[in-house]
Image 1 (cartoon, rainbow, N blue to C red):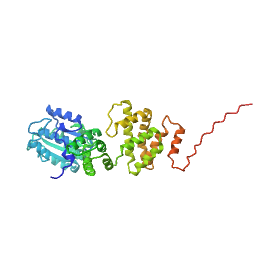
Image 2: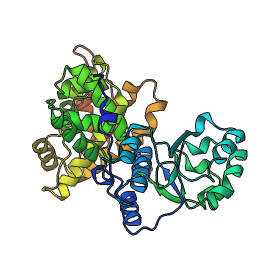
Image 3: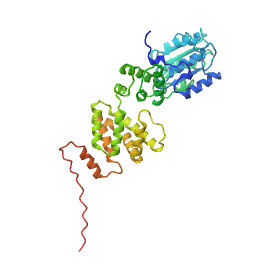
Image 4: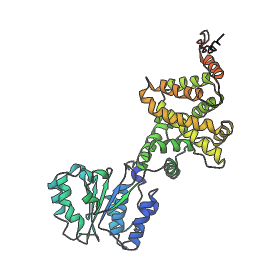
Length: 397
């Protein structure tokens, strides 16, 4: 039997097994259970957050032979055919490849006819924003007053491109990007069911790399399984993703706390030798500072699996809250400056040196000492010119 990728194998078959999007699922479940069904639904959101999946589950709920409900049986012929993509009354259309008005008119010619097998004839139009203006105009009247046996399910990644006349005829649901913690939790369940060993930190890295998309997270997990040989370790997943070893991020913050410019530059050099992305390194640094700031206010607050809680608590106790806030603010500003720097490494180095230079409790003598320590042996430290004292005005004789 051919291998089935995780993103397809673990696609939810009902609303109760979906991860995330509770604000959308709650409205749909209540509407189905109370039989308050609209004729047109619009699902908007970025890639991989569940737009088409929710639309297919809704089509299954509407046509299940057990009756309309939020929990389709999944075993009747209608449910099975919709799952396998061969249900004759579920018409899926890729609007990106059918943008002409002639395509839309051809599609709407059969709207008036009753469904062949199911209770409703469901039109699922994906990437609906790709339709032309003429196609939208041809769709408007049918979308506003379709026959009672027709339901329209529209999906788009760019709702701003839809005419307001279309938006006003649909119930609109905006799907959110999923947080990394939620994605990592789902990946934990998937890998446990698949009997694949994993490290907790590797799941967090995959969840963060997916940038809010569950489908991207499962695709990356497929890639990680192949790359790691079936055992997802933190170092292997970091290597695959080009992510930063979180131990080095902790070490950077520790050296910032100690004011040790020499060790900071050594750590940056090690990251450069490993070919790490300094934009990602700065993002990880900001994430750690955020965790430290939370622990300073609430020591019992949960810490992301990205970092070791004991190390975060240790940093929270040894760094002053003022320094944490200063480092974080300078890091945020440095994100804008990285693109203007001669190269990313130089921009990252300057960001850290700026954090050291402006620490409130340091004075010029400490900063000069740190700069001198960071220079190679044999090179003299630059001479720091001290301003001459102002001359007192001459008194009149």
